[in-house]
Image 1 (cartoon, rainbow, N blue to C red):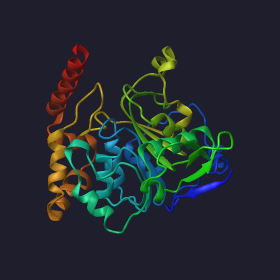
Image 2: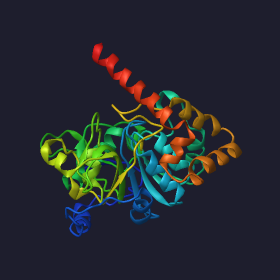
Image 3: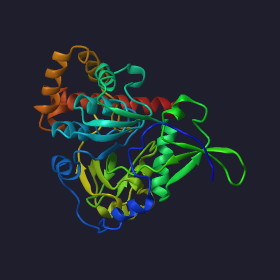
Image 4: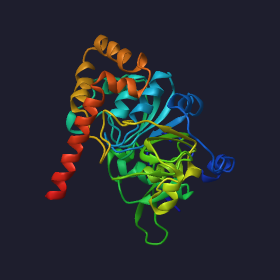
Length: 332
């Protein structure tokens, strides 16, 4: 197969499926109790220098509690998949967790605006970057989940995004058409927040999953944070609803409101006031330093964090807002 062109970006992970299989072959597939605290999960499974990926989509169902804990524990020199990444990216930049990044959607918090601190960090020269698109990163995870070194797509070609990617353009041996090869992406460690899980890691997700099902299958290690633990009997009553099976999972952490201040679809809406506060306070480095100290470094866990920002009263308001939003959609 002839390579017609290739990007100048650096490939931060090894796309060879046989190398990945050497790891997966040794990974336990036992139906064992994986329940542990988030602090322990991050301490034992997230290591400096590894490549990290975060589940969710934008501010929806992102494992924010886990991002706080990763920063709180001072993890450094990691790689990061900036795939539909908003507030999670903002948090990880605040802790300077990563020094290399595959970028697709970063810095922006969608309609809320840009994160001043994330932009400052990405412009500091401390982070090595390779460019992709959201679809490219999803395709790369799909390749890894399939156990192949790449998948061919028809996007990105002819753009500067391709130029600064690590992809290759080839001639299709069947049609003679040009295709871009998206190299497989195997994260060392990923975190996905779900609606429900049993103690073994069988998970239910409601609403959009984007690339999380592929992410779960591509990841060498996987931490699941869940809104609610459910009995294994409930999983067995409806096995077709299990979208992430236990044998992919290394740790299960029950974290109610684990996506706060983001949205957990069908559970609670985002805390827009607090997200605006993040963007606003970032404009003053000294105020932001104190803000991080109060909200992350001196904050024990997600429960304490939520209590600082309105507690159960605020969460009930956000639950009602989410309920009313879906009621409007249903009645439309």
